[in-house]
Image (tube, rainbow, N blue to C red; front, side, top):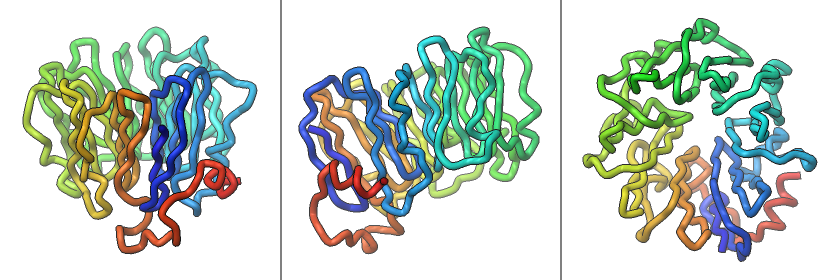
Amino acid sequence: MLLFLLGCNTVTETADAPVGPLYMGYAHACLKRGERYECYNLDLAARNGQLRFPPDEKFVSLSLSAERTCGMRSDGTVRCWGWSTSTQINPPPDAFSKISLGYQHGCGLRLDGTVACWGDLFFELDKIPEGAFTDISTPYFVGCVIRPDQTLYCWGDTTLNSQDVPDGTYQKLTQDSNCALSTTGEVRCWGADRFGILDTPPGTDFVDISGSAEHACALRKDGTATCWGANDSGQCDVPSGTFVQVEAGFRLSCGVREDGSVDCWGCMNDGPDSCTWGKNSISLEEIADSSK
């Protein structure tokens, strides 16, 4: 069963093919079902083409931002679509091992580990660090990488102290927040303490992490999930049970269950009181119709 939250309503549909991974952007989400991806509008106001998945393409991974989607092919080349300036949806023709979309830019790790960025490189985002790296993320107008020695480095906008990275060694970055998973299984965040994002949960048993602009979520070894940061829409009120993946979106969080179902919690609008779609459920067909 696939369960999506549109506004504060639930969407259900049977899922016969293997499900996952799940990717979340500002107002849309994409889920791999079998060998293909399905993308869903999470906000009826979004009409920027990010859902128009190229029908003739197969991708091994995706990256989503507010109004764009990029897919990486099996040969490492990248294709992007959605509303944007021409530079934001036209990545270089290089082969990549990882891509990440920011607010108005994108960056990726080439096959040799070096960094390439495209789009609107404001706030000195064009001062790309030299050398090879093992992971990359692009929170807002920032770029962050993990060095070969597993330490962190960030560049770009200094407004939110994003370059004040913590000590220690790390194994994974989050695309849309200054948070990372350490090599010791801890979750750590840095920079300005907006929405309580620095109040990270304790423990050394975390195996995965995901972050958005206002909150983050992490998965423990036992499959339980926890979220922290802004909770004005219930995006940190994790339901009971276990997950194999958890993703933080904008005022919305979703988790993939072991049986392939997807549960979401939170609200895409300006708070729970504004989630008045007038019905308790809506079908995937209606979502598809509403996003045309």
